[in-house]
Length: 134
Image 1 (cartoon, helix red, strand yellow):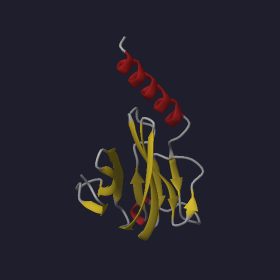
Image 2 (image 1 turned 90 degrees about the vertical axis):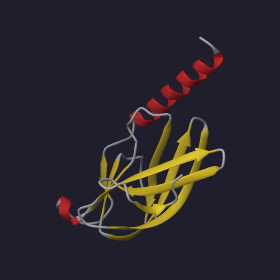
Image 3 (image 1 turned 135 degrees about the horizontal axis):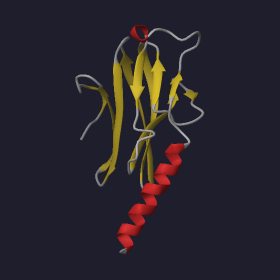
């Protein structure tokens, strides 16, 4: 096995170990759990076997304890800190967006040669709702 392939295998294994302790859904609003039609859901790729990982670690100045695959948020304007990793590279972006009740959104991002991008798409339509996509 050549050196590049060994490094890639090691990075995928490290990423898998990192995300294996994470995942699940977290409620980011106070009070009892609300029906799905009354909240919005942010989806990340935490828990998926991938080289690049994107997650949210701060919602409205509230730091989350760990990386989650889904976050339930109340409708309205929210500020998020999005964390990105690609192998050994790490970056973060702060963004704001308007969440609509009953909608699901997907948080995406890339660390590339030309810089780091993070964005949020409507999970059903694919419409860009925040940030900058490549």
